[in-house]
Length: 308
Image 1 (cartoon, rainbow, N blue to C red):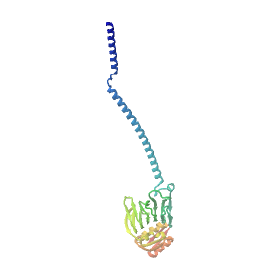
Image 2: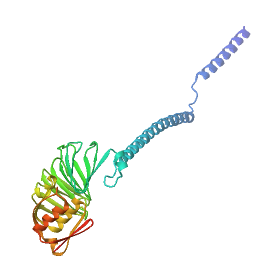
Image 3: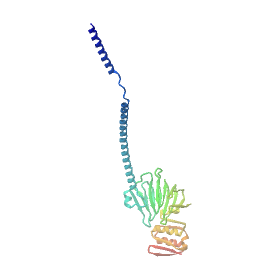
Image 4: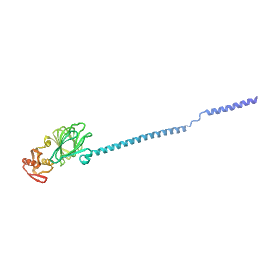
């Protein structure tokens, strides 16, 4: 009996020990916070690395696109700069390649031209005009050297600009005369409308009808009121002389006929009145002047000298 009780007691002790072992196995183990922090930091680093890679791909793609745009812009600027030559100095080949034409008027002649926008242009003897076959862009721009008369077609969205020696004349729609002389003097006479003269020194001056601006080396030296007919009659082959100094008249005739005509001494300041027909040859015109102003005429080859 006692042996049986002892066996039961031993079995209970073993069962309790097994139960304790089971309970110990079910208890929570201590938390390893250091390991958990390391895992969290590693995950954050991995995510940051992945984010930077994505940004790098986007940035690289943006740079590539920007580089392509820059190349396109550079090519476009190069193309347009090469296709729009310096009108005052470009060669005929450069002009033709850029779609420009040139009109050169022989001595003793005048030529009329209708520009692509409908502007009427008359170029005087020994004048040169460069203009595009078609006006494109924000401005209608031409180059003129010598003397030209223009009736500009109105187009407020596209101002008309005449490039000249060291100054530009900017208009919308108007009638005016511009003249460049070989001695760096120039003049602009406004018949109707309004024009603005832009000078190289960043100054500008606006003209009203009947205004005459005189320039020297591209800078306006005087602004006076005149009768425009005195300065535009050449378009009809006539030259009105209303007190023009003989020295100025000889320069005008020299440019027109393409020969050297000079006056000596006291004749330079003599004022001449009357009308000359420029359809006549130079000898006829000089003889007409001699009927007004007493003088002697000597001629040597392609040179005429007027003497007191």
